[in-house]
Length: 116
Image (cartoon, rainbow, N blue to C red):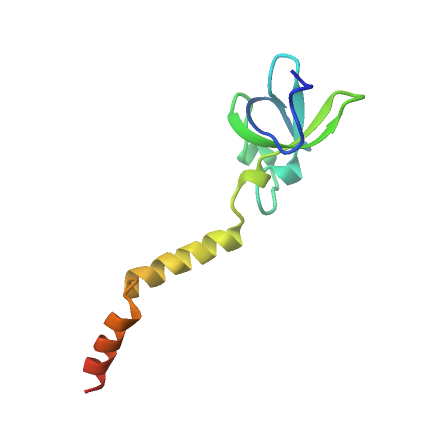
């Protein structure tokens, strides 16, 4: 199974243990990887237990594979949308709600009426 897993793969796994430095995730019976605390979520993680617990089903991205030691570096954060992108999408949605997506021709007629 571990030969089928490649860097960049996105997989579902089960959290099998949580330590102050990260969470161990089982991807299959013979493959387990570590999600380092810095890869749990975007932003600062003071207490990993606030974000993840044993038994959780999680989507992870494979960051690195050490075949010699059968170690897998995983990330949950890599699958999250950055906060900056979320803020941009929210701003665009709010702007669209205010003004809609009218064509320039429609807006021009509206602006002429407003100026009179």
